[in-house]
Each structure stands twice: as structure tokens, then as C-alpha cells.
Image (cartoon, rainbow, N blue to C red; front, side, top):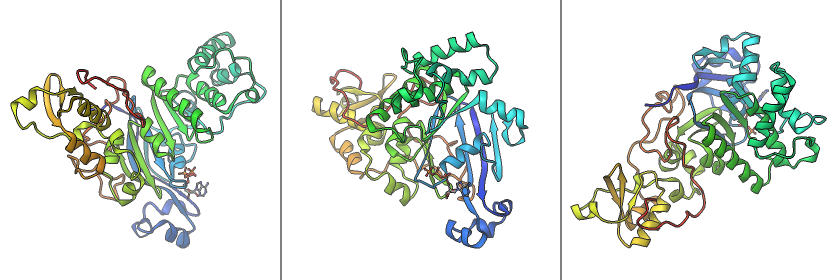
Length: 397
Ligand SMILES: Nc1ncnc2c1ncn2[C@@H]1O[C@H](COP(=O)(O)OP(=O)(O)OP(=O)(O)O)[C@@H](O)[C@H]1O
């Protein structure tokens, strides 16, 4: 059973340009590619017939190249940009029907945004920047400063409460931005490419911070990025966008194992498959009772990379075990097939992201295999795009 959705988006369009409203309803126009549409109508369809759910407790990544429609899509969720057509529901409430005060409450209390350019107030201290959202909510000074101090500590800025933004590094400023969004205790955090201006090491630190916060708090997050590595590291599910459409929505494993089309395949070509795919992809039935009873035990969620290490150490095939049952066996050959990309994974590729593509509602089908628990289950064990740590063959990896 999947967790209930926080956001539910259906048939969403955002068209910029003259008489934008007529575009979604006119099949002759929706069939045009972006360049034709622009030359015939002067309009840009930044988001085209997109449908998805964001489940409670998940990190939902919206990924795509520049101009693919990520920011427009996420801004439509709280109507920072007005959608042209479609429905958006948050916890059962129709976002498009909200009046101004409901919308304000939505943005302030329920879905806080963390921007790339921090948006910090330069003359205020770290503490007062973090308390700002609470001040707007009308919380008293003492209470909001106390709450802000807690959140400042939570994001690792203890001792810097009295500094001004100019006295902080880029990474520290981004932590203040994050703390400010967290302080209002929103149901969903929306991140708009928050780390793309940071240098790689600090960026990595911030990704860890997001993972840690997610693990500790289980907060629902929608995260925009154009960086595949970041998407794979952070996402429970990834919506991959191209020209305003969601071309694939799935877990990192689904996207890497079963790219929906050549575009996604090209996008994921250089991903180290063994670090993303789990042993489920490499499993075969045991050939004998002995094989099912001996050899190192590994979890179904273990990556192929971890299994390679276990098999190499033991010098025998390894058993994929769940609740004392042997689900299958992996050996050097089946594992190498995954690395080489010569395996056809079990299960069909997940559906692409639009009704126009003839797809069912994306992401609602049962995925073939998950490397991470579903939202609402035990905290996700994140994939690391790095060599795995050593394990003994007796341990479950
Ligand atoms: N206000 C606007 N008026 C007209 N066209 C716009 C407007 N905002 C965005 N667009 C167009 O909509 C498309 C999607 O833009 P969007 O900013 O959502 O993409 P993105 O994937 O977030 O890109 P980036 O990673 O560069 O921020 C682009 O073609 C863009 O030029």
C-alpha cells in the first residue's frame, strides 16, 4: 500500500503567451512540438499535461535539463505561477479554488520553499532570518526566537546565531534558508535547485543534511535539480522532465534499469549501474537445495556493488534473503550482466508521465523493485555513488 498523497496533480498545464487558455483544450495545438507551437501561436507550453502524486514522507525529485519546465511545475503547486489547466490538490483541498488568504496560508504554513538564492534579509541576524517566517505568522518574539534557535542548531549553525548573512559562506547561507523554511514546520518542503550555486563539497554536505533531515523527520520534500547524481542520491522517486512533459516517473532503480525511452537511456548512460540497481535485478533461482542453503546472505535492497563484494569475498554465489527465505541467488555472472547492462530487468518500464502519452496515472502502479522503503516505512537507506564499505561474508550486506 502506498502512503496517501500530499500533492495530487492531474492534467496540469502551464502555457505562457497570448490566449494561453485555448492551447490545452485544442488537440491540433497540443500535438505540435514546442518550436511549432511557438511559431504558430507565440506560446510556450512550459508544463504539458503532467499528472503525479507526491506521497507523504517521500523525497520527490523533479529533474530535467534547463528549460524543461521544472521550476514552472513546482511553482504551480502553490500557485506562485498560475496554472493554465488541470487540478492540484493538497491533502484533499483544491489548490486552484483557494482564495488569497488560503493561498497565503498554504505558502506560509504548509508548503515552504527553499530557493537557490537564499532570499535572506541582509540586515538581520541568522536567528532573526530564521525567525522571520514565524514573525509573519504572528508568533511572539520570545517563542519564535526559541523555536528559531532550535532549528538553527538542527541545521548545524549553532554559535552563528548573531552573524549577518554577509558573514557566512554560501553553504552556511543555504543552511539559513533551509532553517527558515523548516522553522514554520511545513508539511512539505519545496526546494528549487537549492544547491546548484554551491561548490561540489559543500553541495555534498547540504545533500547529506537533506538526507539526514528526511531520515530524522520523515518530512515530505519536493526537490528540483538538473543534476542526475543529486536526483539519484536524494530521490525516493524521480520525475524526469523534457519539454514540459514528465517522460518517466519512477524510483532511481526503475529509471536506471528500465529507461522509458532513448532520451532517458542517454541521460542515464553514464550512471554506475551497480551502485543504483539492487540485487533483485541480478537474481536467479537457486539451482539446488544446497545453493539455497549456503553462501553469504544479502538483503534484497543491497546494491549490486555490495553483492559483488560479498560474492568476491566468499568465492561462492550469495543468497538474497528476506525474513529467513531465500528469494534467489546472485553469482559473478548475473552481477556482471547488470554492470554490463546486458540484463533485461524483471518488470516492465514504468509509465511515462502524461495522459496524452496514453499512460496510466504515473507512479501509482506497483514498481517492480525498490531499493528504498516506501514512504512511511523505515527510513530510507540512501544509495551512495561511492565504493561500498567493507563487509564480512557472514554479515548481511
Ligand atoms: N514568464 C515566462 N514567460 C514565458 N516563458 C517562460 C516564462 N517562464 C518560463 N518560461 C519558459 O518555460 C520553459 C520552462 O521554463 P522553466 O524555468 O520552468 O524551466 P526549468 O527546467 O526550471 O529551467 P532551469 O533549470 O533553467 O531553471 C522555458 O522554455 C522557459 O523559457
